[in-house]
Length: 122
Image (cartoon, rainbow, N blue to C red):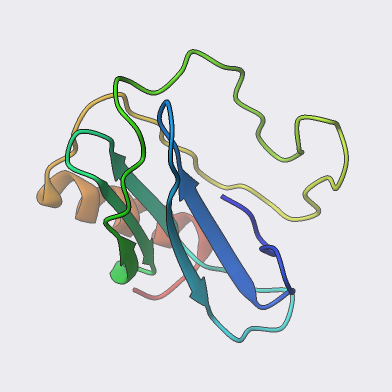
């Protein structure tokens, strides 16, 4: 996930890639910094699902083939790119990473909890 995304400050980018191909959901949200938003990215390689949610609503999806197999066992960089450039200059109030499917009830609860922490209205 990139914020601001490639191509401008008004864009959130979410990408998901398996062993080949690129599933990508993009949304242009038209905001001016600072902005508070609850962002959720959902991906599943076997079903070619890539979904981007903002403030509890699905705002974009992509069914592009992401490749086969599983997600790779690679380092996860939070708040900075892997080459240590372009550091994040905001606040992260909550981060949940799951290696399993999350049902819609639990997803809604997580987003509502995060919204309450940050003062975002869903």
